[in-house]
Image (cartoon, rainbow, N blue to C red; front, side):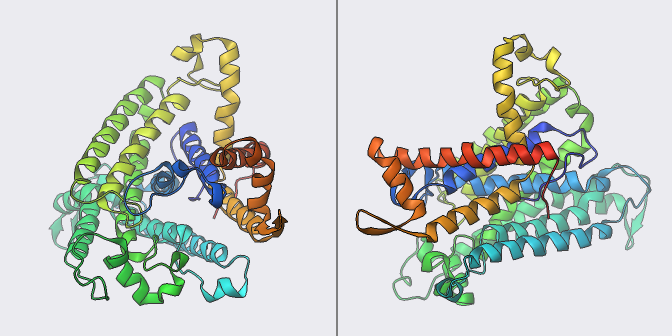
Length: 443
């Protein structure tokens, strides 16, 4: 889903956790996206209105790792060099190209399979379109402000102001001011807006169908181009303002990896960063739950409380994956810290059993965009192929699990098993093949 970097990207020793964390989210995305709508397990469906489910963690997770990839792929901007450092302008063509390609791929998936009824109600926003917009915003923030966190090379004047003053202000905006501005604008705009639509004029509570998001989305392109023809689109413009904050959080973690790369080169250093990441994650979850008492937690409107909780879960989750793959907790034969890890004292059989699982996650994480697009195409194609079952019209995607699995188990479990089978028998072997050949498909 996010831009994948090759195994040699960045100035830091390649952390397996970067790929493994992406791979974990790819697995979750495939399991959720491969559910059969008619019999899907409720726990793997998005929350309706407000609330939080496992499915609601996929999108913020990919935004988080998209942000992490920005400083890793443009690590030169954080290296000490001449007083002005490497110019960020040289990265602009890459940023624009990736933004355009992500948006174009998103529009392709929205238009697929190019039927007339689909094109007449074509959505102009979506998951990849949001990733494109967020990537553009966060990348421009990084190339514009990264110099402020690079070691100073001496006094310099910019526009008549001493560089130290400008440096402090720019660093403050990069590390804290940017998300505060985004959230503040969303809160003020959302809670000062009163929808004039019929049935909404007297509504004062935060309601998706009467929200600012609904008014803007429907006003721009019409209700027929919203998701499922609803009054608002869950990937609309207003909610993207807060979604940017999830990507910014990943950016800060990625910058820490580049700026403190020596700490990530040893098992002990990694464990120290894991403690920090876990602590920050728990604090963000707590703050998000507290804020949720005032502003409901909900993915549909991407509320600030939802952003905080999901950022906390992703930060702590990445810390745990980092501990497992680069802190010696989950050693593999080629791990540089395997001999010093506590888990290295476990039985050889256990290590050999865990290593393929870790390798599979890494393989999936090295081609996240490819597997996102492929899973969408597979699901959409099979869901458009008609198939009759017991005299009723259905599709290949819905009939096969209903006929082959549902008679032997509860329907929601059949949907989960169907998704697991696709993962293990199709996506995992393909991921291992691509990884063994060294094929990394990127934009």
